[in-house]
Length: 233
Image (cartoon, rainbow, N blue to C red; front, side, top):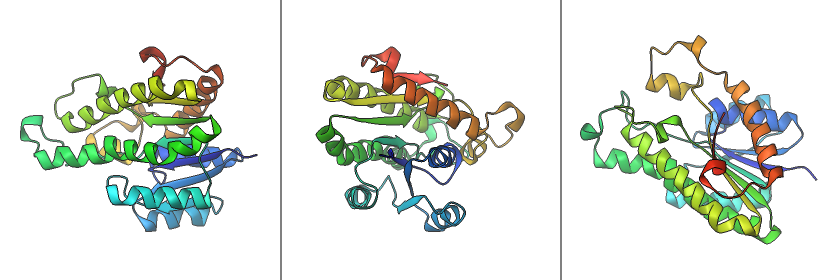
């Protein structure tokens, strides 16, 4: 039976690269994005992809999304939460960040993945198997001026991942938070417009390394502790 994989933020950057590589390996792949035009453009080139239009930061979108996923893809074997937002750009200092902007970043980067895990994990728990990978950042552990809202969201996502791992590992669910490193993606250039692309990872290269890490980590059934749950490529 083919693995069933759901990837949020699947039309750009790392999410897109993961989707295409898993599809090439023969997996059944569903991607989530909030923009229908981006989904349509990608599936025109890769008709094997299943697409789901939803805004991960919208709480009212999560359970309809989960229902559509269960109906069309089935209960995922692997959920990758790659959708993310920086918040306003240019990125302001924390003291200049509006409370509403911080809340919006948390809704997409932290609470959205939390809601989606809660909606899709029951199917995994019934099987006694499944994996969730949350895409993190070095900003989760390093205090970069101007990256406040994004950094806070990723630090919280890391710890959310650790807690889920501690609570659900014995029931067969595997959790990872992965920092893929700096990549040549639209999000990175939005954050750092003058970044040198030659010094950044190709998202396809990072996706290949992440796919190998996921396979090795899940197979090893590593214990739910800080060292193993948060990984960097």
